[in-house]
Amino acid sequence: MKHTAAESYTESALPVHPAALLLPISPEDSPDDRALVASIRKHRCLLVPIKITHDGQLLDGRARVRACLKLGVKPKIETLSEDIDPYAYIVDANLARCHRTEAQKAMIALNMAKATGKTHAEAALACGVRKRAVDDVASVCKHAPELVQAIETGRIKSPWRACQLAKMTPDERKETELMFVSGAARQPFSDRKAAYSLDQYPTDEALAAFFARLGLIVPLPVAKVVRAKIAYIKRHG
Image (cartoon, rainbow, N blue to C red):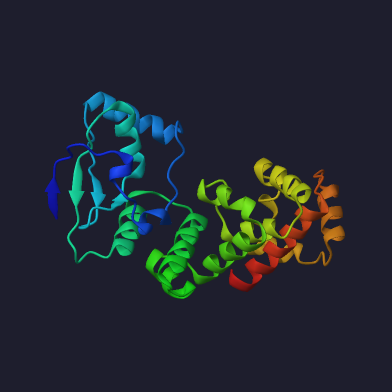
């Protein structure tokens, strides 16, 4: 890798490589962004260089460039050699550096498939995630694009859950979200044994009535999600 010093870089002077767009940039003034700005201010420099391709396109470090511009600090720049695949680099570097949910990895894989022409299976393998997970987030993007931000920010961690939410109306999603946040919907199917014990309730209404006897008010859309999860656990363990 060739190291260069930054002289007069601005946002317009650093065209962004398409591979960089596989990952969402952290929102400005988010906790991560504030921590990055604080680090640059404390050390009076950028500790982790941004990465650019051999032909001068920004590949990794959009948030770092933004923070440097905000503080008037020249970013350290590292130029990658020509033989490095930008898509492979951005996936390997970021998945290794950051903890990401399965849904986030699946979204990255889906973006890679769209950008490179890879199949869902090939992109899933490159990102270390199940093909089914990529298929699930693809369904979310098609039928409920308003949920994409919740996946990218980590609010929805499971591709399966995102796919289930995509099938609901906005009101049903709110009811389901309240149950998941409270933990009431997670408890009944926390393991395979519990799944089989709940399998005796064949309809959403019967399962909701069972929860009611336990003192839990479970809306029918939530009961539907629980029953779907029971079926999933029975199939996959």
